[in-house]
Length: 165
Image (cartoon, rainbow, N blue to C red):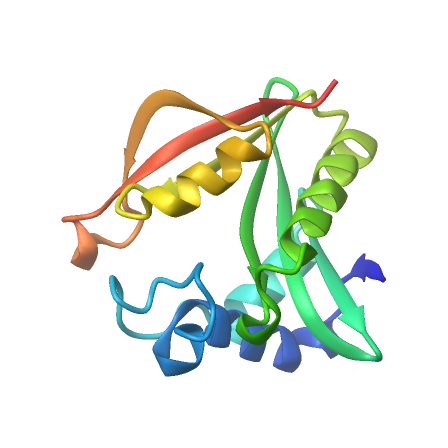
């Protein structure tokens, strides 16, 4: 089941994001940043801002009442939506849940924002993750963006897009 996040979801959402991206728990899956980045991925306060943002939708996937995945969709100008913070519980990765969240994000982008293009960025050092999105119809645009945190300026972000119609 996929639904929109609320403030009541913030503790579980924060725990999921941290476990999927950073630290030893993240190494249980294959999509983590634990070998590239240290520290906290986000905070409950930052997540609350996204949940409250009328230009964003935080989608949650549950199984048996437990949060197992999330993805965020944000409206951008010109019929574009941005997909970010896609993560699945590391113990459940490689089972199709990510594909389901991507499909839900794409449908949400079209329905909620009228988007006809989905954009995303991936850490350039994660070639296997870029390939994963390419297998789902995303294509590299050739654009490279700086990593959003200055303390990790040795990293960069590959931009990928997909037509939604």
